[in-house]
Length: 309
Image 1 (spheres, rainbow, N blue to C red):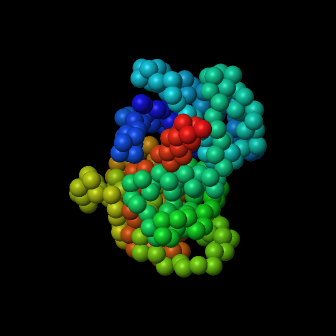
Image 2: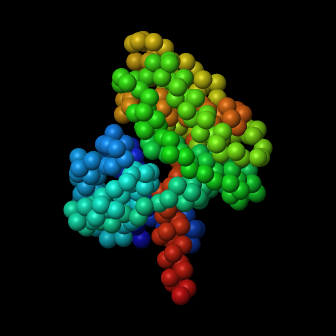
Image 3: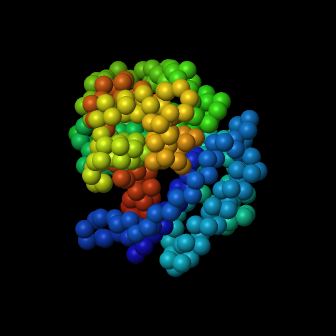
């Protein structure tokens, strides 16, 4: 049986259609559709504006048409920081339901981190380390040991809202990147985690790390199936982003990921500070994330519980 999962994020709205093999207990991605909205840019004084709400509704209507072509009635819709970090979330949910006949579930930050772990664990079989999910409006951090979560946290700093906060022009200058990094560093220090801060590998989810991987693959001619990069590669990207004015290297970077021009530097700044804090050597990019975790936890597991009852 096929199922649809729609994730309303701060930067994008994504639809993933999955099939589940009960015998093998495996999921297969059938199709994936992304619509870039940049909802964080439509938040004024803590509220999502009418224009922002309209953009969400239009995106959901488009994705419903895709679901209809698949003849899919089994679909689930959730929102993360995009709707949980606004003051008018209840009004937004009512308008979405009125306009689209869809009522999204809002996932809280720590729950998002837990679902990230479930999703990434399907692919990577996580034993010990740190997992992060850099989104448009928040960043989730999970510490795990022996395949189990030890600590998890969600901070309300994402690639898009960070860049919106500090960057006056389209792309940041060196001073703005420095200010972003300081802001992130202070947020990470507030976690006050008394534990090991020396990890070799960082397992990472989200558009920022996928964009980094795409840039590194293309500039270094790596194989398409390569899903990891060393921190030195990220430092090179940061050096390019800090260069003043238009330059050949910066132009080439944004040519590879043009859809990330308003969020990439912010995401790289977050990633750099987490790498420095936990003394990471290598970043392993997970193909799975919160949608796969949601699908397993909210759809498959609950259906199994229903069958037992």
